[in-house]
Image (cartoon, rainbow, N blue to C red; front, top):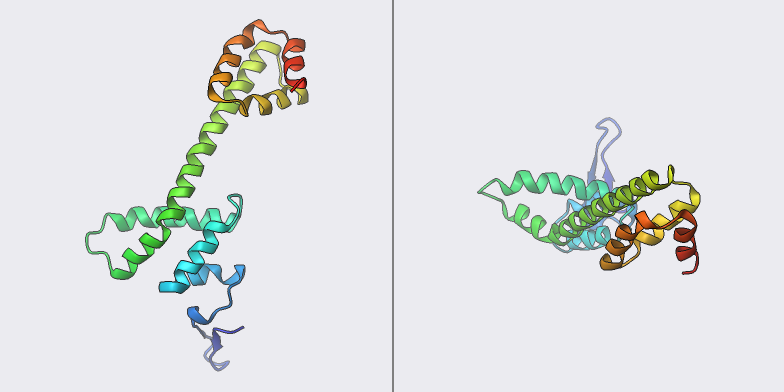
Length: 163
């Protein structure tokens, strides 16, 4: 692989020239540790990964923890400042996504609890209703939650099966 230079076998070591590594998912972590254009490109690749990507989640979580510890220091190196600047967008996006995910999980739990209380359990049909309810605009969502106590199971299913 270009960018990896092995020393003699007895030494059991290698030198990695981060700026010479190929742009592949396997080298992304190393390239994030690079500088300048190499690091910026790696950050862009990281941000472009799907939110569900495990590497993306893990790296951004480590960045989050590292950023907290680094931000308390008053004498940041130029490299630290550059890395913080390069990762700020990815960090902010990941935090916003985490907050949104928490809100959605909370809403889902509230709706499922209301349906469970109202109808005894949440089966597959009611689970689809939950999914549809969560797609509603906030005003419609709130209105539906208020009306839920007056709807029968059949009425509720009919409303969402007609959409």
